[in-house]
Image 1: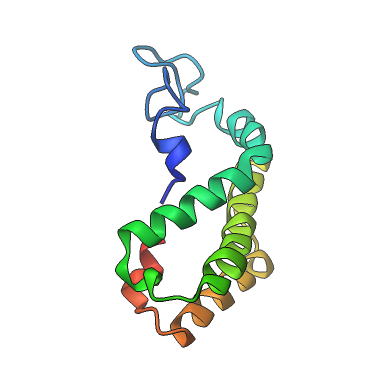
Image 2: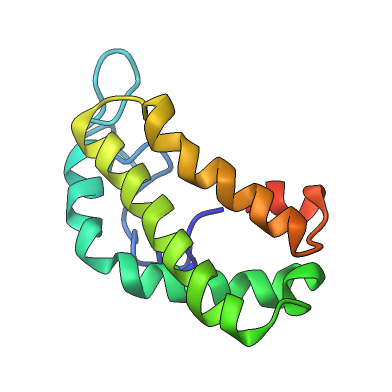
Length: 126
């Protein structure tokens, strides 16, 4: 799920490949966006804002998340979302896949949500 700020207009003028709307500027011969790493790096400073918006959207769109205590929603879930966004944008900016070690924490957080009673289907939607 992309953060609402990204989905709802902060990428105005760009098509879904990362190029400009109506053209192929910034797209390599292989169809990859040359702007991807630069865009990802530019979004790193906005991670706290995007994480807060993402958690707000989760609680609005996924009923199971509304059952979590405020301490989880405003604390762990926001911090975990920030970490996942940072990992995503960092690996895109660096043009690499995340390592198994980097994925260990998000996997553990999913298990924690399961212990909190959030159904697996809801965890996987995030």
